[in-house]
Length: 398
Image (cartoon, rainbow, N blue to C red; front, side, top):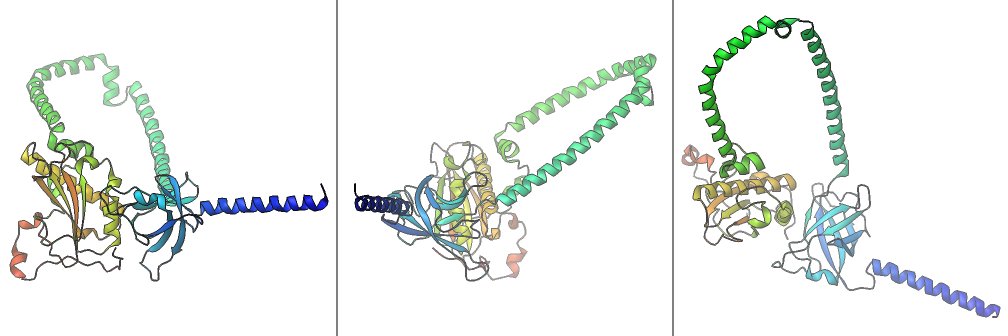
């Protein structure tokens, strides 16, 4: 083969390799595919960069197109992403974006959850809700604090062991009352006779104690306390009504999220959450939009005891509110609860009931709390209706 032919073959091979590289990179960046764009907002992107992966259900489905800083303090960072058209059937209006890390110290990527089948489709340029990222630095700091506390506990245990050894030596030497009792046989016999005399007196008291223990054991397995004692730890029924209002606000909600209770709770007769992330769509809306008042409304089906179902729905609305307040940043004084008890039409999934998050616009009158019904002097001294507070931090309405 001539020199010119070899040179020509080399050039052709080089161009082929270059073209293959361009198509591989372009495929990863969706340069040669049909895409659409979505946006979301975060208070902190935790190291996410332009060009990072966007994954839907763990599958690479797009890239981060742009990250825009806010114009003023207090506003959120806007993240724009390009998604492949194949995701349009599973990414919906109620999908939630979150920033995840590959392993403990791996690279960042943007994860999108599947939307629900009944939710509306997203359009090019739409915004979806987001979930705050997990800060690894804060997690490491908390782990360090736990280790420090463990070391201090170990020191206390070592000191306690030394004290026990000292006490044992004194007892063996006959020092003190316990030492005399152990080493003096006559004193031991006298004490045994006294104890025998007291035994008959204590026998009747023991029967009463046994009855009391049986009653307490029954209470621990009782419906009303099992959900609070064993699963959630709520002992005071007044805590259920801490943020509960006596009725729903008047007017039409501007947004509503409805969840079957079977999707959220571990058992049909308890208030222990098992699938908290299902609430993230509602929590994201509360964190990123202006509203006047929001109410977590829990309802039970028509089966079962009426009073027990009322307490159950109060507890369920309370634990849902607690999760939203702890996970998302918004004015928690604007989030109320309402346990409806038995409700016709609420008997979804074999009597489990439903949980709804009803969000009302600014200016909606807030009904009085159940705890506030004892004293009514404030109503008599003011003719002005109580209005829902308006958040001072500007948030984009979607």
